[in-house]
Length: 351
Image 1: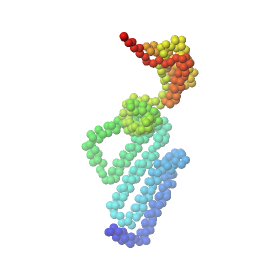
Image 2: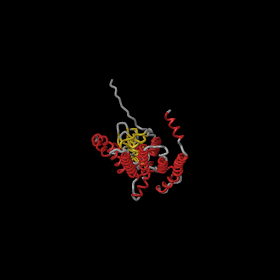
Image 3: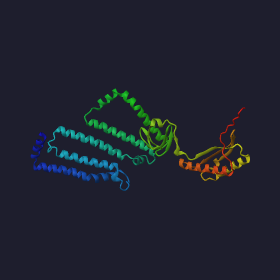
Image 4: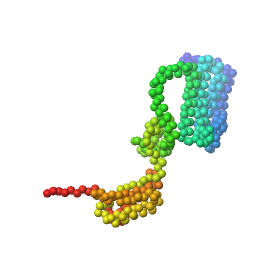
């Protein structure tokens, strides 16, 4: 009730000058809101070379600049009518501190948005690898936000020397907690420099297998073939034996074909030659890799070793090629009326 009475008294004391100042303050806010789009657009076009059509207004830098300009307008309007609003020095000081902290973080955000892969490549004369560049960009952005946080702490009136001393008391705890993080960051750097895989590769190590979706400071994100996401710490993955299935240039086809033990030797030779010819005639099979040999004799079968490399790099095309070769082999066996051997045992019954 007291607040309502105070508000009524406050409004009743409004003069023409007060109303004009309030209108001007609102006008300042509206003006900065209207101009924010144009100013942010121009600055974004200047800082971002050759933006694609329609990309500028969706760019994070444009949105950050637009917010930055609007907040400046609000601050100027508040300072302009501080006497009209009867704001004391304590409140004004608090508003200024809050404004400065907001500006610090918004400037940090704008600087981070200006640091892109293209800008880093231009500094390094276009010879920077994308993976390493992204990693360096993330480190730089992290440092910028850390510096912004320290400046914000100073703005709040805290003594950083006392804070650092306090951190020194708990340095052992912090060191122990940071060990794993440091290992993961170093592991991420090793991944980018050694390049055992990149985003989009199909990798396999330990119990994990899938497509690499993202490599961050601390972990590598893998989408498994069950469509689930696994985040593996970089410290683990950098020390693991990794099979990069995307790097496979050719795939091996190998089978031990067991023919019936009663198969005539001439027929074995014919089957062997037909399979060899069939493999060499196939477009996706490397001719110089084809091996078809009478490998061994077991107690149940005559074994043919069939060995060849296909130029199928991905698993799907290899499976199709493998299936086609299997069909052809079975057709050859059918044409020669030879069956495949199976395990048999001879049992003697003593009367």
